[in-house]
Length: 132
Image (tube, rainbow, N blue to C red; front, side, top):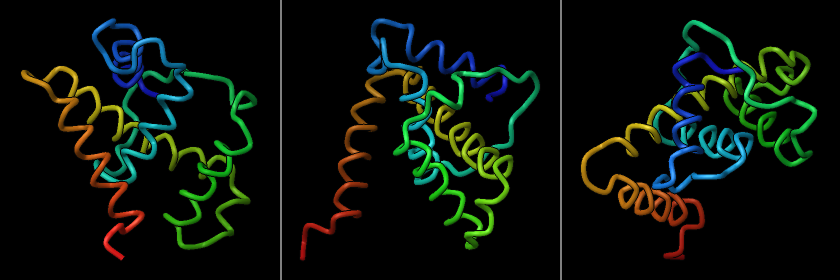
């Protein structure tokens, strides 16, 4: 579930031909926004108007475990996994933060996605710590 504003952001990013996310499945963009939101923008509570981007059964096992892992890390307690509603609320809020940031990069004058590319490379370097 996403709010109306986030739904508009998703629709724009997958529907506009000049978007780097053009033609991407919404579920895949949701997962990207979830990860990007987790690392860069943080959680944003959903606003008004709830819309489903995809059906939960369409999540792959890997996608489900990413969502669950983020929730367990966020709560610092694996018991959160017993509360599916809480798990998905955390994911939705991170994805909300991520999609807002991605949309902002898209509509920004200039080449905001060059900034995104640089950001992703830096995140990868931090994760893998290539200097060792």
